[in-house]
Amino acid sequence: MRKIALEEHFAAPDFAEYEVGVEQMMNDKDYQYYRERLPEFDEKRLAAMNKAGIDICILSQTSPGLQVEKDPHLAIEKAQRVNDYLYGQIERHPTRYGGFAHLAMHDCSAAMKELERCVKELNFKGALINGHTNGVYLDHIMYAPFWEKVAELDVPVYLHPADSFDSPHMYNGYPALKGAAWGWTVETATHALRLIVSGLFDRLPSTRIILGHMGETLPFMLWRLDSRWEISKHNLELQEAPSHYLKNNFAITTSGVCDEAPLKCAIDAIGIDNVLFSTDYPFESVPLATDFIEKAAISESDRAKICYKNAERLLKIGQ
Image (cartoon, rainbow, N blue to C red; front, side):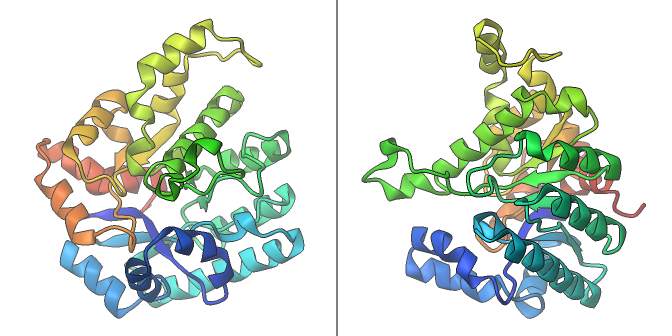
């Protein structure tokens, strides 16, 4: 079956300094495997796609990227550079690759300008943002014009995990819990909830956010989120319960979660039209991810929506 994958990573030639934190989380053998594949766009990547029956990969600069750059001017310059680099790679394989913009969120005006350039001139499908930018989250009032530009351009933002700005005491002595195994899920799910309770989707109801890793646990928390929100003290009253926004403003991908039980739960919780296929290349096994989605006990019509139809609609592929 045709497949489109959305959370597929690469590393630009001059971005090694931004991968140090991720490298330190992993054992040397596995990270060497990733290091060989992140900068490569031809033999290894295309072979993996062909073997798995993946037609198109939407590529994004690997985490944490420019979100950890301290110099705003350098971040703006490098964002333009990495997006131009990605565009060059896509042009070499235009039927196989698409792109998500990498943005310097240090400066709202610059991020808006670069997103518009990437969408209108480079034909990118939206943006992927690696969490907070030096501790500033995307619900900050400074980003209000950015979200208006996102809504105007009618493209999604993929909210990708990153390290917490500060390390919670509860992880002390257990470094494996701080990263992709658990800490990134807590960080990204909380970031998504900040967007909801900030009132973003009441102000801009057409805004669409994509979450990886089967929704960072949020599809499994809808009832409790609504129940506890109802009795909590709020900074802002929402027009709807939190679950409404997760069902109407969010899509999720299967990246990094090859398990039928959470897949079925996600479909039931947020709807089949909001679940999309991804592999998390090269950090997860492409054969495992594709074998999982091809054999999952779901209807063929649902499988087609997850594998490619939802992505075609959300990213306007083929339009």
